[in-house]
Amino acid sequence: METLTTTIQSVPLNHYILLSAIIFSIGVIGVLIRRNAIVIFMSVELMLNAVNLLLTAFSVYRGDASGQVFVFFIMALAAAEVAVGLAIIVMIYRNTNSIDINVLNRLKW
Amino acid sequence: MNTFYFIAFLSIFFAILVISAKNPVHSILYLVLTFFTFTIHYILLNAQFLAIVNFIVYMGAILVLFLYTLMLMNLNRDSEPVKSNLIKIAAVIGGGCFLVTIVASLKALGASQPVVLQNPNLGLVKNLGKVLFSEYLLPFEISSILLLSATVGAVLLATKESNKQTA
Image (tube, rainbow over all chains, first blue to last red; front, side, top):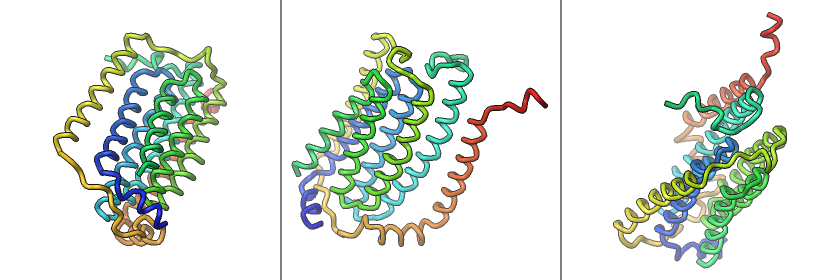
């Protein structure tokens, strides 16, 4: 454990923010460029995880355990979101026989 | 210090592969690898509880759920819908602008302090359990209701409405 804690001693907080921002942007781009509903969901998971990592880094930086408890709640929320979302996708697939989100453009405009 | 940069590079690399893989099953497998690198990040930050929860809940439960759904639908490369190149370029530019905004605001802050772990048992299960069950007891119970309602809702949405014709 001592070697692990000395490993992070020299990483600046900015680099954690930078890493999370890059992963979050990749998630945003993934939502925009894909049309498969499941891959869009996976991009949302990527964004959630980027935020989780950043919260953990802040929590360690401030020496406050609340941040890590918050990450735990976000994980519970992500599990609920995935359960409901995948149920909706299964229902859409059953009705339209595809998971292309452009089929569902009736709510547009 | 070098470990962090190597793992960070792997995270970004696999995240790009997730959104660029043509086959959705490959996307999910790359997402598993991305989350594994996130678990290593948590271990490097000495957040052992979160590392274990990330490993079990995300990689074990959520991604297997994704994989099962995808395999139930029997999709492959041929049925994969593709967007036009113009939309792709516009999306990459949009995401890039977002990234540039964040990086620019970060630069305005100036140099930052290194992340130093003052309390070595901050992220251990014992410490987090004490905080969770004293300060955050009410949110914890409410999140259990959220999970229950999500489960009921998922079952309600996913069941076939076969008794509608008979009734």
